[in-house]
Amino acid sequence: MTYSSKTKQQVSQITEKLIVALDVESAEMAHTVIDELQGVIGTYKIGLQLFTSAGPGFVRELAESGVKIFLDLKFHDIPSTVAKAAVEAARLGVWMLNMHALGGSEMMKTAAGDVREACVKDNLAVPKIIGVTVLTSSNERALNEIGIERKVEDQVLDLARLTAKCGLDGVVASALEIAPIRNAIGRSDFLIVSPGIRPDFATNNDQKRVMTPEAALKAGSDYLVIGRPVIDAPNRLSAVESILADMEAVSE
Image 1: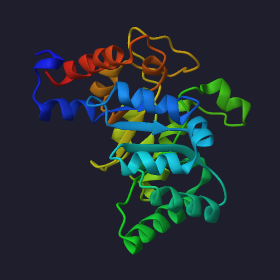
Image 2: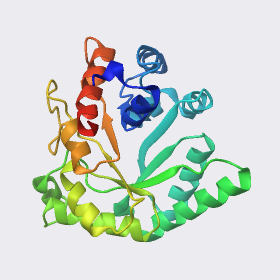
Image 3: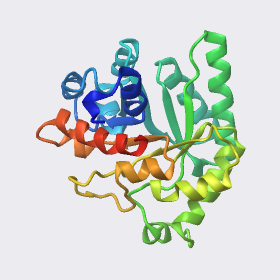
């Protein structure tokens, strides 16, 4: 079957796994991307650039309009600061937020507990809370520069185990580490969100640990985050449809 021949339910099962990163410099540009992909993509990632430019009000606006937002700010600070920031993020109505697992167990447990408590108190939907393991732009050389003398996979696995122990919903990790994470974490509901996804038509840019959409899904990733291959494409809708066609091949 081609992508266009799939039923609405089948299309939804495919597209809900794709998160488009709004790596743009303004709210106006973000709206342009969302308008171009309307009806095809419903989940977007907002990172540091757009959040700094457009602010929390823009995040709230999108969330209230029905757009699912993964707020990718990678919180990393003392436990009370991260917890307070995460609670405010939840109050914006985001679907998912993250923090660096390197912040440690006290930080992650405090933040996750405070977010869930605040959401119950305020009658809000509880966002997915995930831990960042090792950035997909990093390799062993980058780890060595900051004093981590070990293989990337070993570091990822230890941080994934810590994240799960702290009760978070999952991790951000390269698709290259999915199989080891699945083997190490005995939770069927443990989410793996994979950036560093590069379709065949795209370049790697500054990403070092990459995988194609089809291969990432086969490896077991729950969500794929793709930014520049879509944002910088001459025709963003065509780029997304090409990516979805690769993704749907996994389910055929």
